[in-house]
Image (cartoon, rainbow, N blue to C red):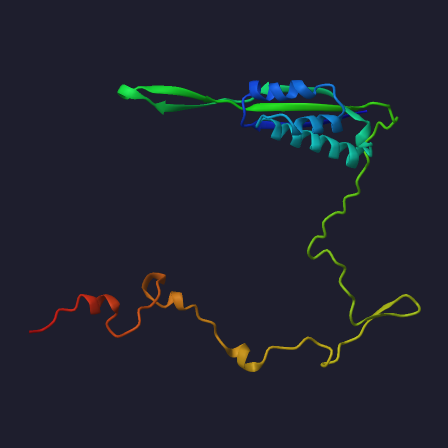
Length: 200
């Protein structure tokens, strides 16, 4: 049984990550994680994360034992390179290449357990709004199977709007001014007050 995991666009050059990956190739997963603790390289961080992710995939999706796994294959490929420039003396510029990496990992079992299929997860379908069945209030089914509609009493009906709220007209204050703008309060308006000429 093989379990795969990959990480893409790691912002470290493949050459630096390969120095870390070459140390743990072919090791058991737990021993590989212990070994990476003592590797003095920054490139070990994405590799540790990737191994933990692959172990989690094996445990949750395939119900495998993490003590029974080893690193069958791990390879580092080049990702896209971004190009930048650094200004130098006499108006010159030096190119900078910021490289990225893709890491692919395959874990396999030391002793084959015979499991070949992933565990199926039951996903509950999301509840749609308005899909709930409507209650038939006021409908009575007789013994013969005929439906009879019974009128609701006034007390059972939903509360009506009061007469004051019904007769009230809602006016949007933004539409009172000229051209749909807010109406300026005052007789002459704000603009006239600012530019009014003083007499004398």
